[in-house]
Image (spheres, rainbow, N blue to C red):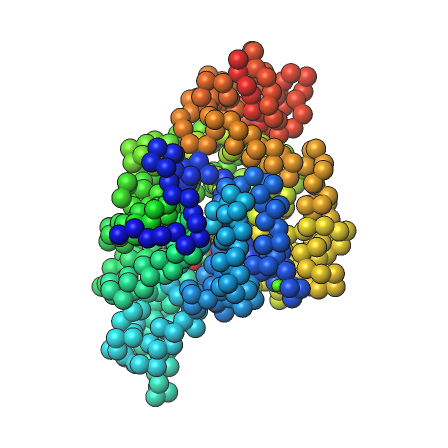
Length: 550
Ligand code: GLC
Ligand code: CA
């Protein structure tokens, strides 16, 4: 059966390349994008008001972090109701308008689905608590009796990703200390039991709900983690298969979602958040009857080092080739230290385990490298993700007062981990002082903005030829008009090992100099775009260039 596209998504012409294979996708963290109603919190009205900005930037789609009703214990990744928009963000009617208005500007919408868990405030969890042990309502989650004489110990030793144990004990309806429930993230995010048919059915209905409203795709949160070993054994490093990561059963779920996505005249795209160290295991999610694409975290975590980047790019392309899926390229998202900060440090790799406050940063160097990385990323084959504020070169904010930090990752590690709020600070749009046009003057945004952010504002960068915003705009427009960019093959050019050099098609090439001396450009080439001025006709260190080769 074919469904009609209620929001008028164009039906795919049979021979047209699928949009998701080469799209530039902009990630909107709604809470921090723009505040339309003046309460200090970003909202859908704010996004709608700035759609022309996004169209001018030149992106093909928007991915919205969860915008559903939520107590915001984890920035909305604790969903209380998928069919309602959080009142702080707006209404369902506004979301429908936003999807339609974006599409009028040629921009598709991707929504975020969080299958691993729901909020404590979700009706199912409220019912599970009330219904008591052994109930059908509890069978949708992982409720277990505790170990120890009085059930006072958690059922197993699984850790939470946010620190501490992955189990919390509940008080039963009669007031006695009771069972424990599993939460691989915060206690406010109880894990769902995907062995339960209702859990599967409900998520497919949620997918239909958003696809019917014109969503062109979904980003699937923690996609490799949803299936657990029902015996809930303790984790030991040599245990194979892993009790809660990348279990084979997960693929059936996504095959079923793929059939659903393909049943639309304009097939919807499935995009996985899949963090797996083994590229071959990663690629299994991208088999032709499963997900369309998945985030490439190996590239994101890679240090600013030519050999390592060359290897990460090669590994990525080799892993994707056998399954026929396009690669994705990502430098930043709402969980990761901002690129200009990360690249300005002695250790330029990203690793959750080593995030700390107070690491020395050379922002000028980091920004120079981030500009070069932008041209590298936008020239690689496949689709690309930009995280709001990346196009402004925003740095990580590292001095948010402790009592304003909301991220559970900070609090559940006893403050050792800085948390992720530093990359979620509200965007500066205009003006010389906070809130920089994010909210009306005098309104304080939900997270404080630095006092020196005027220079990063959209207004300050708009007309400046050397700004990060101008670089991104120019590169995104060229990426659209250069037929060889986006999806397609690439070939490495012979080069100094410290210079990344590759062609796209027969006439376009990209060079990135990661050495500390200027590098020559190929003969007979015309410069299309550089991340920093050339040094005579040499490519300076930490600089990238796009060339027309003739
Ligand atoms: C994903 C999200 C992250 C969230 C977690 C739990 O990793 O990107 O922000 O905290 O899942 O839902
Ligand atoms: Ca608001």
